[in-house]
Amino acid sequence: MEWFAEYGLFLAKGLTGVILLALLLRLISLSRRDGEGLQAGYLDVEALNDRYQAEADGLRTLVWDAAAWKAERKQRKAIAKTEKSAAKAALKAAKSGSVESDSTALRARVYVLQFSGDMAASAVSHLRQEISALLAVADAGRDEVVLLLESPGGVVHGYGLAASQLARIREAGLSLTICVDKVAASGGYMMACLANRLLAAPFAIIGSIGVVAQIPNFHRLLKKNDIDVELMTAGQYKRTLTLLGENTEAGRQKFQQDIDDTHLLFKGFVQQWRPQVDIDVVATGEHWFASQALPLQLVDALQTSDDYLRQRAKDADLFALHWRQRKTLGQKLGLAAEESAERVLMRWWQRATQERWY
Image 1 (cartoon, rainbow, N blue to C red):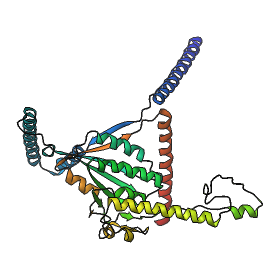
Image 2 (image 1 turned 120 degrees about the horizontal axis):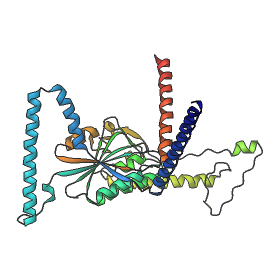
Image 3 (image 1 turned 90 degrees about the vertical axis):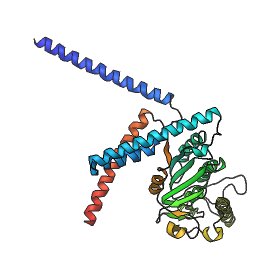
Image 4 (image 1 turned 180 degrees about the horizontal axis):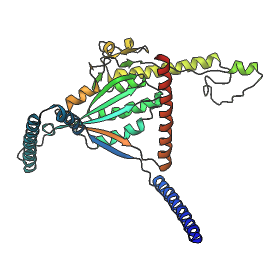
C-alpha cells in the first residue's frame, strides 16, 4: 500500500508539472500572437443617449410609483413607433424620388471625443484616428463634433499637430464645439481656439498664450571642479544654449529670437481661428478663469460639458468615440503591476495626510 501511495504522489507531481508547463507554453503562444497580430487598435463606440437613459431609468424605478413608471414607458413606446413610421415614410419617399433627400430633416448625430493632454500631447495619436473615422461618415450639413478638452499645454510641435487634427474637422465643414471643464492653457488653448463654439466651466483656466523655455547650465560647477566639456558643432546656430558648455551672448539672443518667433506664430494662429479676440491684449502669457475670459471673448459661453451634452441628447444621437490600443500580455501584466503600486502609494499618502490634518 505504501508503494501505491508513493506512486500516486509521484504521478500527481508529474501531472501538475505537465499542466504548469502547458499553461506556460500557452501564455507564451498567446503573447507572441498578440504581438504579431497587434493592429493599430480599434474604435470603441458608445451610444451616450442609451447611457443617459439607463441612468435616469435606474433612479425612476426607485423614486416613481408603479403607475407613473408604466405610463412613462407606454408614452416612450408610442413616440418610438411614431418616429419609426416617419423615418420609413421619409426613406420610401426618397427612394421613389417624389421628394429630394434632405440630410437636415434627419436626426442629427453628435460625435463626442476626449483629449486629456500631457506635456508631449501624446493623446494626439488616438485623436487623429478618431477624427479620421468620423470624417468618413459624418454629414457636414447635419452632424456636430464635440471635444472634451483638458490640457495645461506642452511642447509646440505636439500641440501644433493636435490643433492641425482639429483643423481637419473645420475644413470638412463640420461644426466643432469644444468644452473645457478644468483647463485649456497654452497649447491647450491653441487647440481650443479652433472651435466654432467654445464652452467653459466658470472656474476653468483659459489662455496663457505665450511661450516659455528654460535650461539649467552647469558650466561654472564643472569648471570649478576642473572638468572640461568639449562641444563640437557645424552651423552657426546648431547649438544656442547648452547644458554643460559655456553659453555666449549670441547664443542667448538667438534662443530668445526663436521663442519670440514661436510666439508670433502662436498669436497668428489664434487670430486666424478666433478673429474676434484682441490678440495684443490676451497674448501676454496670462491666464484667466473662464468667467474673466468671457468679456475678453476667449470663450463663447459659460457651461459645463455635462450640461451641454445632456441638452444635445434631447434632439440628437450622441456617440462617444474612443480609440483603443491593443496590448500584449506583457503590457497588460505591467499595467496591472503599475496600477497596484499606484494604489498602494495613494493609500499611504491618504493615510499620511489624514494623520497630519485630523
